[in-house]
Image (tube, rainbow, N blue to C red):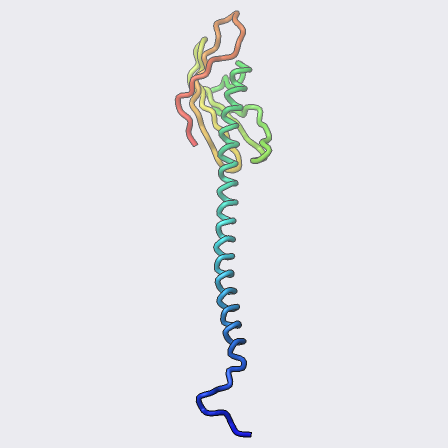
Length: 147
């Protein structure tokens, strides 16, 4: 048996080396993509929690306005007092407080503060009560709404 000529070489195993290189490249690429997706998911979760707390605080202000319209005896002191609180299905507990700023027989200017999930929203609200002897809810004018 004669040895093969020098220009012809044995290439057995070279396919294995190329396949291992391709698998390594694909594994590194997918690891990087997975890390990027995990970071995006964490950021999305944090933003969703903040958005839910903000929406719950806004809903708390709406709830506080409705409470003040329905019950004229609420928020009659010039210091922050708690209004009936409620449990939001997303943000757990929403705490609503009001402070009487100016009062006259026909109107009240109050500051409402709603806190939910560490987020606070405030609103300056003027309630115009109907004249004595007339039934009905107070008319509301909102001059400032802040988050």
